[in-house]
Image (cartoon, rainbow, N blue to C red; front, side, top):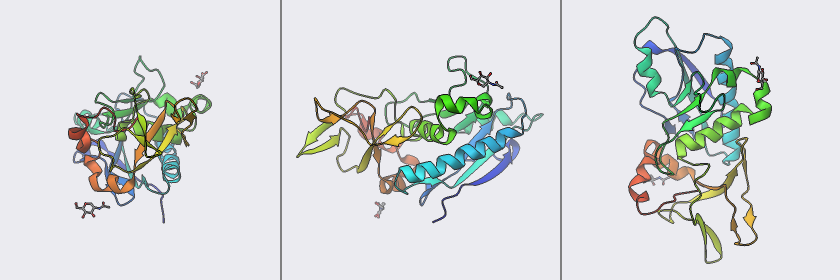
Length: 243
Ligand SMILES: *[C@@H]1O[C@H](CO)[C@@H](O)[C@H](O)[C@H]1NC(C)=O
Ligand SMILES: *[C@@H]1O[C@H](CO)[C@@H](O)[C@H](O)[C@H]1NC(C)=O
């Protein structure tokens, strides 16, 4: 199967109809990446964004057992002189904007909701995308993109480790979650954004802090946009969909 990403380049004016990220079969579509009109124009940015998402797509596809990839991404380029752009920027789930003083060049995801709730947006600075020295610090951009994606799309917290994220049941390790019918796999997302097998704490025989439960594709497919927000109603009774 062809899991390459197709890019669409749009000027803000043309694109006010985006309805949000969807999963179409195995591929995420309507992934909108907006370059803020505050960012000084630099033609290298678009190529860097394409590289990051393309690499992230292969990575996500491999890491999640060929379950999902980024099929189509739209890059919104600021149309200087227009009054409309701000509106579109606000809708984009991935934003390229000047540094927020609290984070500097470090990529971050605004996620105000509970663990498991979809985040607001991922923020990358132009410096982060353009300065290759930072790859040594943060890991490859594709992997970092997937790491942030996990925060934004799946509401996975770095610090979302409740009192009891995992427990034993009939000799299996189970993630504390709202419905045990939710199928998935455990991975640990490293600081560099790569997924690896969870480690087991010898004292408790349970996964260590940082182990995350990822939902299976079928459930992602069936709930697509509603993915996590859809589970919100249930999550009131259970603190951890995953950790
Ligand atoms: C790139 O990042 C490194 C590490 O933070 C920094 O020392 C260097 O000055 C940056 N280069 C540019 C061109 O900004
Ligand atoms: C998704 O939901 C529909 C309708 O509820 C159901 O018929 C279908 O079998 C589900 N698909 C998967 C993959 O679970």
